[in-house]
Figure 1 (cartoon, protein in one colour):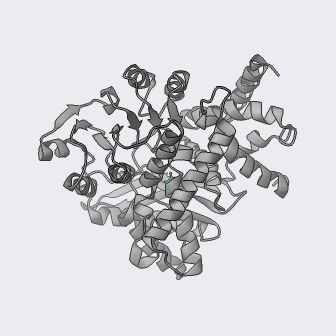
Figure 2 (cartoon, protein in one colour):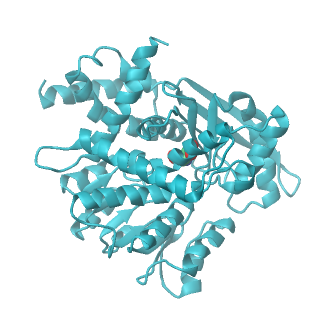
Figure 3 (cartoon, helix red, strand yellow):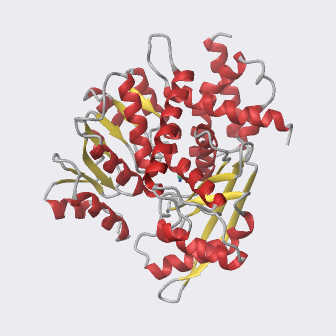
Length: 451
Ligand code: GLU
């Protein structure tokens, strides 16, 4: 088939997806990104052709939406909306984080659950895809309010999850504190202590290295991709966005490997620290996160570095960009600016931080581009290792978990190169990740029949 025929097939498929999911912009953009690489692949492989695999895959197996009422510190009743999207269980129990953020809606969670299905398949571990959360924001809330919210959320969620059914974890706005409150309520309602959540505290079933895992994994992947190009993290100046859990792990591992993170950001703007974020500045990130203020400005005040209000870090001249904050945080103009500044590439640590147009600009310029579903899979991979440790009722050492994480990331790298290598040597990691993830899920779906 010609490129033109594929293009019209892709547009037909997208028209179908739009008609079934109108107004779900984030979800549709994730579907388009996958359809563009998979439709030609499916056409060329008779095993997958004519099986309506994509139509089946973009339909979540189940969507649960529920009321989350809670009482704030003033005694007023608040009402939020809770969700769990159980997207695909072909290769294992649904698995994916919970996001508590004001931008959460069904479209965002469907996009995240869809991406998670491919990501989890890439880890080589037996985990299906799911995602959940609420439009509740921890910003400005007291600890007691966060606890009451989490308890109310779990009072409904508990009946839909289980260690062999669906295993949620953290995501934006859901860290160790929130997972603790969620787990406490689950345990009380079910009267059982099982590995139903991951990202748990160390004394109650958590895994060493889980807090660092997403960021460490991103940097292991980046190092593997750079090594392939005859480069390495050592000596690189890196722009990072966000200042939460993922950025923190990235900063720590970049420092270990001899690179320098020169920016961090929040919803308020970004800081530029030419000396690099290291030493006590890394610990300060944790304090900023625990303050529930969601601002990066205090970093600039504390360490006397430049602060750019309302701006994004992509305007700085750096060697590598690692967006760690949220979807669509880098648009076409930002990507063009990075290309003009001769960046080596962009490695996604957040889930889909680049718009589809931004990805195209980076790839057209033949710069390194690694999609989040491959680069940030280390978080959920160590969640998978936490599930294994819980099931075996043992704990591995930090070195053992880190070793397995590094092996998994290198394996994902090699697998994505296998399917993404283009004539001429450029690696289309997006194509590689989509095809490698698809094959695993599609084979399982085909084997299990029309269910
Ligand atoms: N929220 C993380 C992700 O986007 C981790 C999910 C998990 O550990 O289940 O992959």
